[in-house]
Image 1 (cartoon, one colour):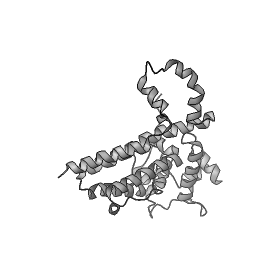
Image 2: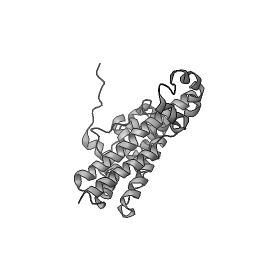
Image 3: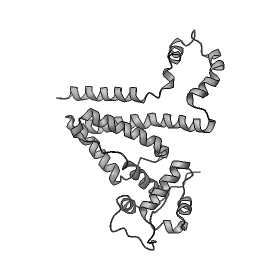
Image 4: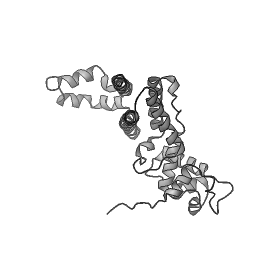
Length: 244
């Protein structure tokens, strides 16, 4: 059975994301705001994830009727879009004046931290989603940083996508490991240590010399984020040097 798709109106979505002055809504309570609804959604998603987020649960948290929320937010999909943009506003806007490498490096670390503060971000849809003001400002600033390094439009967008995809991809693995640790009550190191005796019976140095060498050095105990970030920035630097 095909999944039911929530019908959305682009004009209402943009009015919500950008808090359009003309979007006053009818029947709104004077003691409740769009920002309060979005903040409640973020708090619930941080605690329970997106799968358990619903308009009903947000309404219960705010102490209002579910139907009253629809005068503030058209539906769950638009609520999640507003939550995503709100969290985007937590990230400092990169400054081209800082130099392209420090600016991108600082941004990547902030984004990495944001994914771990708000793991549900990794589950929030990105395709066919209209941008909010914070997301737009962040992307514009990152493109400006790439431009300040002497890159043209295609390379500017490529640098943005490369860095964003790297952080998001590795954060997905890291957050998944944290969730598994929360379920088992064991850290990654503790979980593997418990299984080391049986694992060693199958994964031997004679059969898998490279893997066992890396394991013996403790390399698997790191998340690899800093290594990958440095190599990504090195690649961008080579790109910049190759351009006239």
